Image (cartoon, rainbow, N blue to C red; front, side, top):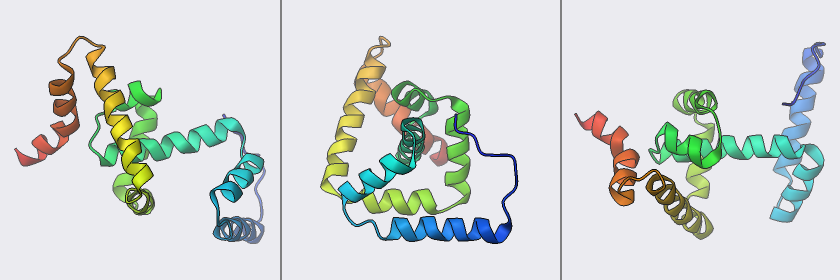
Length: 145
C-alpha cells in the first residue's frame, strides 16, 4: 500500500502541489500522453488501485451486488463500501463514468463485463442467466417494494 509522510506540508505548498497536478492533467490530450504520464507518476499498484476504484463505482452504478464485484475485481467489501459511500455523497465518479459511458469502446467493455459476471455466477452452480439478472436488478426491486 502506498504511504505518505506523516510530516505536514504547509497549506500553501500543498495547495500549489494540487494546482500543479490538476494543471498537468488538464494538458494531457491523447491516450498515449496520459499513459506515459501515469506510468511515470504512479506505481503499478497505485494504477491498479485507482482503476479498481473507478471500476467499482461503475459497477455499483449499474446495480451490481457486492459479491459479484468482489469476485470480478478481487476487492474487499470494505473497499466497495468506501467507494459506495463516495458515490452516494459526491458527484465526481458519476460525472466521469457518465461521460465515458457514451463511447462505443465502453459499450463493448460492458458487454464483456456482463458475460464475465454471467460466467462467474454460473460457475457457482446456479442458473447463470436467472441468477445474474436477480443480482443485477435486486437493488431496483428493493426500491420498488
